[in-house]
Amino acid sequence: MAGVTDASYRQLIKAIAPETIVYTEFLSTDAIHYGAKKTMEMINFDSEVERPFVVQVFGKEPEHFLTAAKVIEQMGADGIDINMGCPAAKVVSSCHGSALIRNPQLAQELVYATKKAVSIPVSVKTRLGWDTKDSLIPFCQGLIDAGAEALAIHGRRYCDKFGGKADWDPIYELKKAVSVPVIGNGDIFSAQDAVEKIGNLDGVMVGRATFGNPWVMRDIVDALHRNAVPELPSVKTIPFEEKVPLILMHCELAVRTKGERKGMLEMRKHLASYVKGFDGASEMRQRLVLVETIDDVKAILG
Image (tube, rainbow, N blue to C red):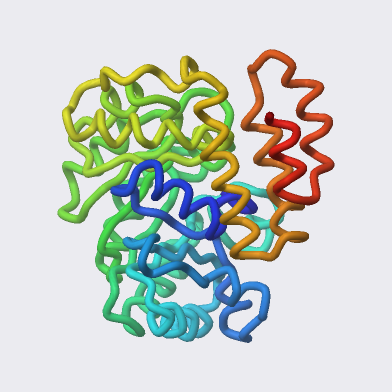
């Protein structure tokens, strides 16, 4: 969710579904190690609103993980999640993200260096495997031996990217084989999906489905609490006028955390997604991608 789960988005999600555990965009341990200003700003969070707050990191240098982990803990985060699942070509070509699945020894060294540096929980997000699913359990057992205290598994291999249907069966088998919490990820688009797929797992991780549709988290949290699809109306049936106050709240949070110019520039992609599927959306979207102020948004949304 790079470019999406910034502080304003996390705070919006918490306003909608307070029990959600929020993660940062994934951040470079190299950048944190060297104190890069932009990356350090991305770790900032509202401790009264965003907890539990987890910082997700990526990289390949154990010493940089050790340094970054200390910085993250000192800044008050509740946990550190190591990304070993991103399939983006630029990430993988640098031996980051999913590339670590092919290098279990280095993956374990990164977990060990991180856990050695901090007292807060350390987790790993990864995939079913590189081009096979057979390596999932041994790979994850190695991560646990190195200090990982929870796992989040995306139900696709690296070679699948985001194509096809996520396979949760290997994730259920992994849960049977390990003693740490296991969270499932992949193709959770509704409360019904969450209830049907959680199985023996400890939770579900939702990403892309929230973009333009953060209300889905309210339904998912409620559904998992009751182990049944909520009786609330689906997000698709919520009248647009009922969404407008939260859309404006998101704008206000973006301006508060990043200033009006930068905040509203970054809001443009969210605004375009918020109006998708409504009457007149195309014309409204053309205007929303040009907004510069919250007043511009208010005028367009009526």
